[in-house]
Amino acid sequence: MHALDYPTFFVPDARGFATIITMYSKATSEPFPVEAIMRKWNNVRGQVSFLRHAVQAPPELFSFASLPHRAVDIGPAAKVCDLSICLELSNHFYLCINVSMSIFVSALVVLVVVHTLQGAASNWVSLDLIELLLTLSTTEHYPEIRAIFDIPIKQNPDLLIVGIAQLKANWNAMALELCSVLMPMYITGYPTSNAILHRLWQLNPSIVIRALVYMHGTDPGTLSRLLDIAQELKVWKYRIICSVLLYLYLYLYVYIRFFMCLSTYLFICLFMYLLLPLRLLLLKGIT
Image (cartoon, rainbow, N blue to C red; front, side):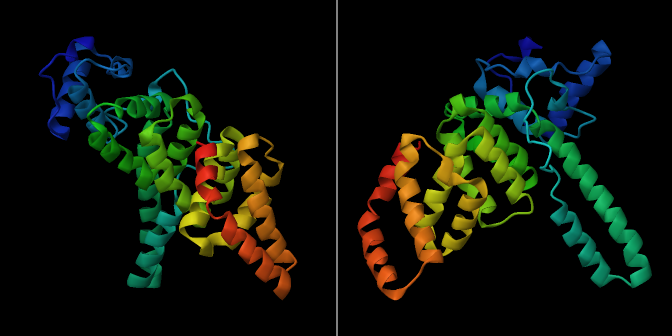
């Protein structure tokens, strides 16, 4: 299937994608070799068009989960499926239909949504897929790759953010943008926030540190939440040089929170105002 990498190859729509996969399966009686698209093609435009439809295809037609390569290690405590969506749908049906019928319909909706989300999630288990897309984003097709990443952002954010954290050596502009979109969601509160933040802290602490600094700089009202996260993750034990300033910065806020008196509060407020320029230094030091 490496022959697909020719200058004019392009997949215009989902129907064309399904035709390619189906014809190959009928001709060879074998599933499509996913490995054929997991390297950077000469025709990047054609490869991106193929990937755009591949990640949205039904798992029975095409799936990256069969790749015998690296998988996103999300940890035992985190769950891939966002059950809050299912509960929201079931509650909606419960209110709209009579009690006896709503129980059956709500259960059916939950099963359908869970099956759909799990089928879509199977693609984003592939760490190689995430890495390939990040690599392709360094080409002129950045907008197309960003549009592809919108799918896991909405459906499987846990897999995406943990996958990015695992790819420590493959960070680029796309990885930074995705983190800036995903991390505020976990910082401010999400059904899997605790499990995912702990996993990120284990894999790549700089992601969490950067998010804490960024959130405080953009929304000081989240300070209480930031302190809770810092205490839960034991950020104070993070001993690399680039986090020393952040350690001192947050420590003063902890002092304000738990040992507040008027004179101390006013003094530290003045001191923290003078420290505001250090935020930029912090952000540079942990990138």
